[in-house]
Length: 252
Ligand code: ATP
Image (cartoon, rainbow, N blue to C red; front, side):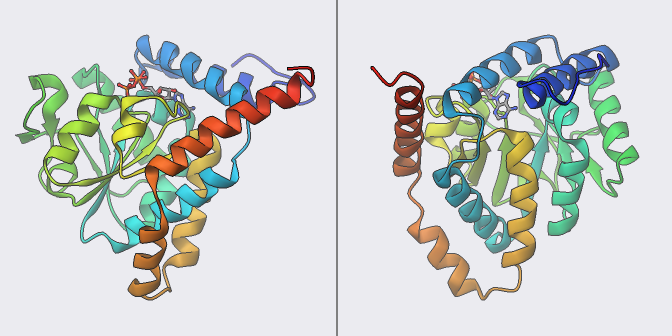
């Protein structure tokens, strides 16, 4: 990878960009993944590259939802694998569930490489290499899923996902947690809980919240979830962007 000095003001963002580029070179990430990363970077810039208080509240609600789930599942795509492979393994371990490789631009080779990467990072159980069922309402390659994983889950975490698959999962009666820096995306608007934050910052905090909340009674978790309102949270993200922009241009 290119050597980026830690003192560079855009260090974190440049490292993320390098990781996704490396993901393409190593065959985890599709070429389209570079564009998705660029869109995410842009929204991160507008948000001030920080976890806002409303994103932190969404992370807590997401942790509560994962802990309340009868059968939670986690989807991993090429950008997720390039950016946070160890962190996703840690989250799956904290919940004691498998990770499922699920690709928008599916190729068997990429699925295999991502699964191997996750195993190399310590994942015990990785699904997705032998899909055995299709999600209704999606075309063939994008519909592929695995019994015992996303297909049978009641709650699914879909970081950096497109709107169609989010909708298809909701139509099956599942509750969905999105991680998406774009508060305007169809995924963010439709999801049960949308974490408007960079996946690099969000996943470690989500794992930490899962660990902290795991000893709480279900009634506390239910209360936390009931207090969460996704529409309000997205409106707050839009407000956070406005405020950040005004703070940069005092005369605005
Ligand atoms: P939709 O179909 O939901 O309207 P879209 O067409 O924007 O969404 P994609 O481009 O498939 O969907 O999804 C990528 C999404 O992931 C984008 O909204 C982008 O902002 C977001 N994203 C990209 N990189 C990151 C990141 N590092 N952290 C969080 N979100 C990210």
